[in-house]
Image (cartoon, rainbow, N blue to C red):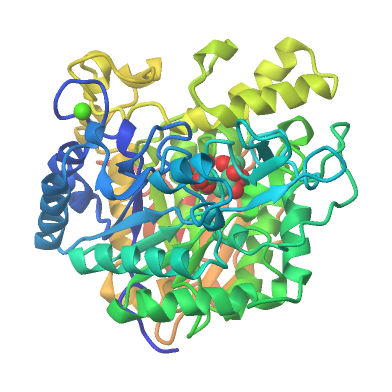
Length: 571
Ligand code: TEU
Ligand code: CA
């Protein structure tokens, strides 16, 4: 395999509004991020993905861009941004931006002009369509609820398309002008020194422009976005998604050997190599296998409880199916997900211990680990109690859907508390000072009350903290001596006959690593295979300073406590 500069890197996702506020207005900002670069460097991360900081009316937290060439005032200035890139470079770190090009904001100049002259050239940059039989052109349900077609104000029978909120009109990728504009814009940011992009909702850019209706899958008479994407993939006119993405790549990313991570849902399985192979559309794409396991396409009302055996199988299947194609981007959580330790851990495992357990398993898989802000200190869900505590538009719609499907108000609220995207969007917990040290003012969004116990400052001083464990874990992963195993090594499931054990090998050219973790409620002894009996312990999440490693090793067996994870080198 051709080695690429980003193969051995660890990435960290920043949700700028909630990371660090530098000026007391309660909103995290770019100088705030710059002020914490040393913290991030010390943690061991190399690549920083910053969620959208472009000018936006923030209907969908910046994923609705009104000017691609401006930094939103609340985040700072372009000088602040340039400084961030420069300071990151000085520390050998890379900044990647969020690239939101399936849609823009309805406040974008083009869309305003399109509304003013719906028959003119600006409207051609979007999808403006006549209604059919006196109603919407087709029956597509948008991600955030309701029909994907919205009436053009002041027009009787004209609609525009939005895959997400109605304030996020989809851009027309068949329009030359749009395409060239977007490519130029991407190149402009690359020339500024950003190292690449996280590419938002990119599968949605291809449309079946005949816009046929599909069979309804809900009482609203609409069909899900998944059907729409599937229909677009089968549509045979114009370039297919692969050709579109290669064209984007050739004209932009390739110029700079940029690192790109695609947010790709609904890919056909046989397309994996096209997406992340040597000449793939992207450097990597997110592995959403765990997310898909809980959250079926219909919505939170149909979400399933996590069963450990299924979770283990899902991770194994995904690794085995993808490792030879390229590198997936492995996540525990992100800004669209609840906190991983609040969803995936069995109830008997203490969340802080479990954060180390889960981290060990996920960070040592084949792929590029992406850590989401706060994950490294074991931040948890917020325990929202009422609907008006939420900010996220998606959560409000999921509540509505649950009630429509027969959930009581209380049960629908419980669902939202478990799955809401807002769980990950509460401010970063820096210290036990007021508002968790995130701001000296009033934070834009509520701080999780558990910040007094869970915060960076306290954990920096505690040898046994999640934070210090993450530092060790990342450092271990990045040890040059073990690169053959942790970065390039073959993934192989191990000890599957033990019901509550999640274990795997990473077999490199000169090192073999064995990761074993116990997700059961009690101790578990494991009889080691003959080849595994000569071991050296590299990491143990129950290690306590001053004592021996917490793990009990005999020549041919190993005993793990509930929630314990160990990383072993096989001699
Ligand atoms: O998400 C795309 C996407 O598919 C989401 O609708 C996802 O299914 C949902 O958040 C449930 O987890 C991206 C961004 O990550 C998200 O924050 C934006 O809201 C969305 O695009 C629109 O730009
Ligand atoms: Ca601020």
